[in-house]
Picture 1: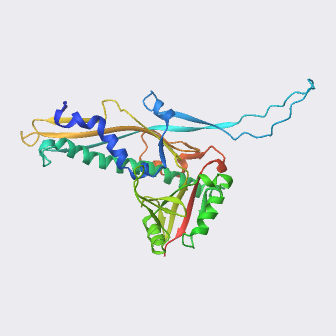
Picture 2: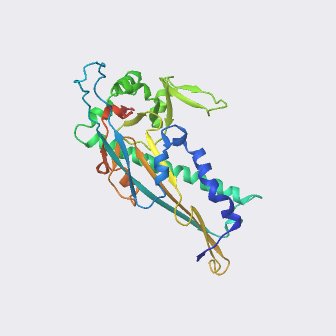
Picture 3: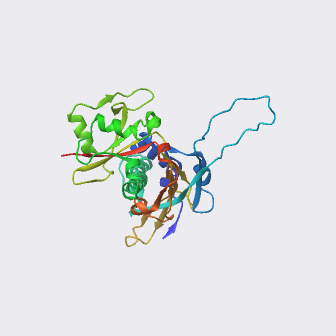
Length: 319
């Protein structure tokens, strides 16, 4: 097989698949994920790692001016840290007979683009939620972290009081916690209790649901065990993300005239590179890490004061 330009497939796919995938991505539409300008500028640069640097909240109080020139202001100390971010690579491939003959209708390009965009939206969402689960595993297992980053109760159903207590973990920052990510089982529990509000679509927004004023995002990718489900309460943009352009392009079609005993066949290849980071956390893994590695507690380190991270995990019981 050898890579060849295929006008019927590649002409549209190259620049449009990612656009349609982003539009279809439920986790992106939730507001949890934002494209970060700094990561976007670095994702195509040489090297597999970069850093996001943070400055800690400034301490101290202002002082009054004086005519006494012997008095000098005492400077406070600037402190901060850095979060390590990996450049992750992902590839996928499918093969079959002539691609444009495998779909019906007069517009095979659109059909292939649509299927690829649907797959990409789900695959990228799995990768992002793997990072969420890795930070959760860190919060649950590292000494002293659970009291700071995890709320709720393994013996009680999700309710307004549990949500309020989780918000309080962030003190005055709690007003920024406007997105609530829940498992479908928890969502069903809230719907049965008539506690979910449906917000109709408008010219600016698609239809969505809220609970206690928090915008809901439902996904079964969050963990659960023995009836205990984990929800995620966060501020918009808690996950920083950037997609890059892999070497060789995002889309390739490899043709083989000898496949199928001479009938011919084609292989569709998708490549992507990305950087993603949960705000306040440094990733200690590698560029080739799988989603399972992204979800591993040992690959994360909190580098920002917990009160400055607008994120709380909530455990609750579904019986």
